[in-house]
Length: 602
Image (spheres, rainbow, N blue to C red):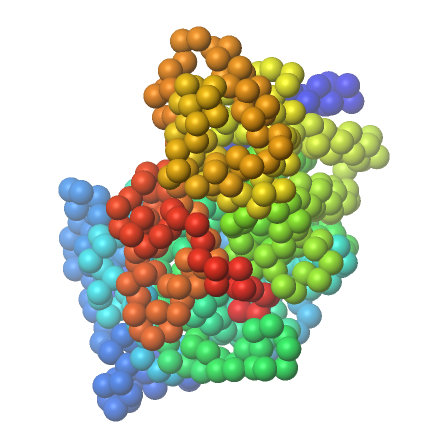
């Protein structure tokens, strides 16, 4: 039986099980009303004077009309007709913290605490919204963003009738040290929505106020970090990288004090909130806290739920013991692929703690991330990371560390033999990562098939890029524009500025010859075909720090134009766009970009 289990696991290692979607698409019956259950929210709806200053909050109740909310184009045109799923799986499945008062505390024997978002005290403004998320996930017509009720909802100024907002309890290893209970310190999960495709999504507000897990924080988020999270969530999705999504970005005039670089210079910033979505917000730390506190029955319940909901093939085809092993092997494989994709676009997450690593292997919790400008394997986007633990080049190894912590968290559910088998599964991670990464590199370099020298060709290119500080994104993008004839003559057009940076390197001419010969092995592959493949793999645009900073500076003055422009550009990152080129998004970064810093302060 043990050998059969090992073979089952090994055979499934390379497969990515896609969770079957919940077939239900039920809505809450009755009226969709504003909630007046908290005293600190009540004044927003009962004091006429406050209503004049807060037009985005809900000023009246609406009775639902008996009509078909989903029109012929499948989009809901009024937010009054939108509602969460009738069956809230998380609320129905897991024990909820019995303490209903909202104060910082240690929580046991629960996965969630009931927490309502804290309303803003000042007028809120919609900075930007993702039409793609609204239409293709939430079934909403883009025009709903102008509705008073919608803006009240996405700002946390109201909750929908019948919904129970939740904050998640989890733990984690932060910078390789166990930190105990962490949890959603400024996030509230508003509810679960099942869309017209049968997909179940969890909607969460980030920056919505204090929770039992806020520790020493105030539960708020500021505009600069919220702009970055909003834009990067959508940018990563359109790059083809597994990620949480972002629907809206709201800003207020509520003052939030932050010491951005922890240097004793706090300043007042504006409070903001992002409505973000994921199929699940469970992470490695979700299991770690239960294992650490020996809440084994709850640990089993959470793991079984995750497998049943998101790894459906495993649940339906394997016995319990084999389920846990194959579940782990899938996460190993999918995490390796996610990090390989990060590396392929020069992305560094910045805070790769186990509480920031999703059980679904999607990128979550965008904080002090960064896309490299000049190639530097030691790139560290987070100024709070003094030792460079989460540098760009360390991310694959960090993934292994985090998966090992997942292995430890699952151990209480396994027999000794299964624990041994799980160790063997984890040992396959380096080879899985290398295989996936090399496959992506071959596509980025336009190579067809596999040759033994491919890794060497890539390694020499990276060596030249590091030595010359060549631009990571545009080196690969512009490589596609060289014809075989230009490569053979080493004739580099002047507009290919990233490749021109490489040209003075002592290895360049010889490397170009070797690379050209590798491409010529496939005689039927034309320059045009190769360019099309490479351009579909190498983006023209990524969310560089300087681009985000430019948008943030304008947004702080209530000019949201560049946030909206960046969202539009980053939704088509592989296509050269006239407006983006005018803004310099495809040009060498400005000199001031070298001075930018980001930190964990958000």
